[in-house]
Length: 340
Image (tube, rainbow, N blue to C red; front, side):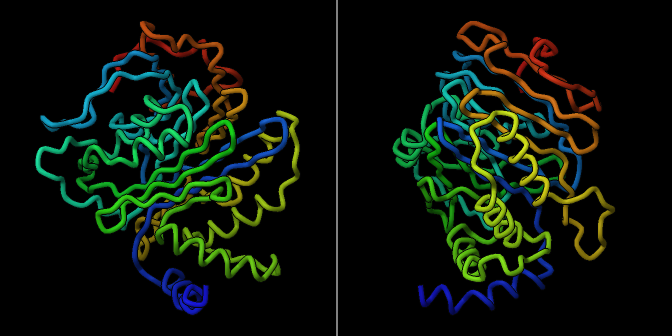
């Protein structure tokens, strides 16, 4: 702890004044009695990522990358997800109540593959987990075996995504997966409720420890990931504890909005200081996925119980990429579509 404390002020200053550009996302887990588990998440990006919502059934044949040695699997579970560029799943919840959030991490380093090792594209990481695991425990035990190599394919702008992954299950258990210096690092436990972007998770915890010591006398106010981490942690700690469905969803949206970024013009000095383009809130207990694009006036939601996600059912899409506007429960608006 002494070593962490000695690094806190220099580290905070580095991220406050650095000109390193970062995309921004935030996520947190809110829990209450009676198995109330709600996950809030913001997607912050420098441009529209053409998000659609998808309903994927169990029994889908998958391949983890375009490479000839891409890992192959058949999905065990259905899921409702938000896509990015129609290249991968960025966020979603499966039929077992496992929630996955893929967030930007510029310093991610996936290392080099071992001879003959199969590959999994990082843009397929969240979907692989949703397809194969029912709980955080399963994911930590099985994915932690590192049976294949993570690889990054280019985005439409030619950049290669660095990401880390968060998971939450119906018990309120959480896990954060990061690849640091070529090695998988996992933080697993109900205490790991908040994640943003840079720095790595261990350093985020150290920074948050410093601010927690001030007991909310004041909070850091920039849009940097480390500041959003602190604010989300504080708001979560101060949130009322309720088992009432509508109130718990409202609390989650209130927190995620307060660590989101407004729609604003690009800054020439910080070209990747990105606005929030959408927020999601997943009610794990009821398996309802709430979605709020920031350029539309409405929140809408998907109730998994109203979709057929069993093996043999077709994949369906809720089109959003062309600016469609929805309100209320929208499962009836999904249309059969060829998966990306």
